Amino acid sequence: MGWKADFSKRGYAVVSAVNMEPLNEIRRILCEKAKLCFNLLDVKESDPEKFLNDFHKYDIPDASLNAMKLKLIEVCNQQNFGKLLYEAFSVYIDALLGPDLLFQKNANIILFPPNYPHYSEPHRDAPQNSSFELVFWVPLNRCYGTKTLYILDIEQTKDSFSLLSREESFEQFESFCSTQGEYLKAEFGEACFFWPGLAHGSGVNLETETRWTLNMRFKNAYSPDGGKDSLQFFDVLHLSPVTRFGIELEKELHLKSPSVENVKESPATCEEVFR
Amino acid sequence: MKEYFFWLDSRFVPHVPQSAQRVLVQNYASKIGGKIVYYSAEEWIAVEKQLGLRQKLKRTSGIAGFIFFTLKQFAYGTQFDYQLLHEMTLSGLEVHFAREEYGIRSSKDLNCQFERLYLYNWTNKKNNKLFVFQNQN
Image (cartoon, rainbow over all chains, first blue to last red):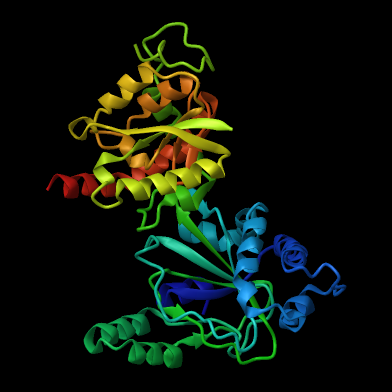
């Protein structure tokens, strides 16, 4: 089954990057910044896959892990990961979302060392996020077994949430999701993109390697927002020529010159304009 | 350190109290390297035209700009008030929005940001109308 048919039927698909260079660049930057943020500058490992897999061996205390990870996210978010991810997977994104495209300003970085007790309970991203987005889940090292994410397709998601509303038992809902969902197998260079209305989650990583993944969202510029504020979360990646012409005209209509003559660029007083 | 006025959102107060708006705006101000030197709010019945703000602007000088709680404060009228934003930036004021963590630093910046702002307002029209409706009932 092709990726489009796969996505249309299930709401998600695992695909290969059309361009590996941007992904290699993301992983190179991430490893460099991780060494900085986790105080691992003396680590000499130059193979990124091995460095990420063996990350738990550097004995970062659990209590510091989250604060250091947030620092890493902050540092990495100055690096245009969204644009690089787009370059890696542009064929799929353009086909599903069209030429007027927004991307999430800040990529989420997920890391789960083996047996790390804090994992992600099953949930949907929408409607808190817009139901019209596309979520990209991008492994930075090989994901398999329990060192991964599980995801339910559209039908399974419906069943899981009817269970949650009928039984009012999160335990049963979680059990259904974690047993019925597909545990994604993906190499670095692949990604799973999914509709945010699908249930997904993760359990304890029982493998002997640390899991590293990125999350990034893309959205058509004209699609409705969800509960999260799109101005805060998204930026323009590119717009079609038609949209650009239209917006230029709107700009002329909305940003008229004020009635006051002789407006200075930076007078630090408003009296001239607002009298 | 840059000095800003904080113009709180009267309509949002039932949902986000004044004290919470102030904390968020102060945090945002320090994030952009500034501080709040004065704050006030729009008269409840004038929020759609922001008449109090317009009056305040006539008397304002010597500050870097205004920080609003939310961009929605420019959308309580029949349409988003791009013109007021335009005039504020033309007069040399920065205009920031703490809830959206979004700022316009000059009229040139507004010109550059217009496409992002326009698309945002287009996709948010429904939310804005719903919010106003909820507040009026």
